[in-house]
Length: 128
Image (cartoon, rainbow, N blue to C red):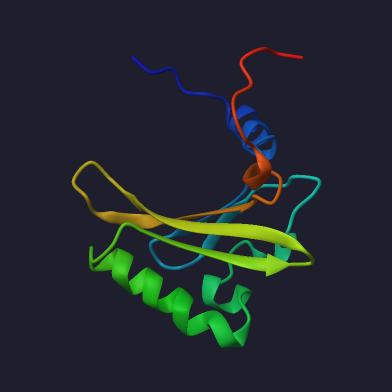
């Protein structure tokens, strides 16, 4: 049986991932964002409880809405984009969160600076 983890432990673990995470519920309300020190897209506590559509630039709201609509209708389970921002390559992925019956419960947004990852070649098998 899976033991429940303390919420603070989960929150701290998410804050230490090399990605930014935001969670939106089934009603399009922002419920969580990770608090890493080097966030690409700054967030303030004021976004919690706001509609996710109000957290994006006007020019991209229709894209966000299309993704959410597709997730809710089961047309898709993920969406991905990449943009250049301040000489860095930013990879943005959205994932539908579904329950065991495949019902839509929300959306997970994962943002990562992949500039340095794109430079990796060969193998590194040993810890330095």
